Length: 197
Image 1: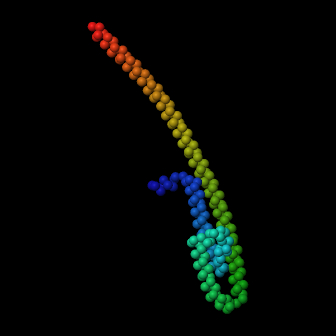
Image 2: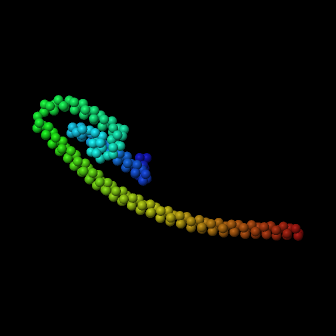
Image 3: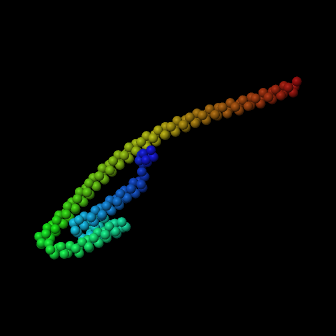
């Protein structure tokens, strides 16, 4: 029940901004790790600058904790593999080297195309979310306006009721004061009459 209530509570702009930044950070880190894995799969050299450029992230991020270690491990693996493949390259026919180079170029072109398409999808989803958010905010503003008008009406009724009760209280106090005055005069009259007798 508490979870349902939390889901229905409106988020503050600061919370929305913090969540957006956290999501953006997770997306960028995932993109970096994906680029590193792709470079290894394509037998491309893994460098901090190359990864930052291919993932379209800042150099700071590729040196951040949790990302740096992944890149360094990939570089060590490539170093060991390079030593082993030097012997194999000497035995490969020249045509295979050209074929591998063409495949790498194709892979690079396809990766760029995939990134471009991902960017287009991301922008489209962002626009859809922005539109949904605006409509949701409009509905929320309408609800708050209706609540405000209802509360203003209730306040006006309460103030009118208070004024009516204040008038009744004043009349009752006037009646009470008049009754006290009458009782005093009656007592004086009785006292005077009993003194004369």
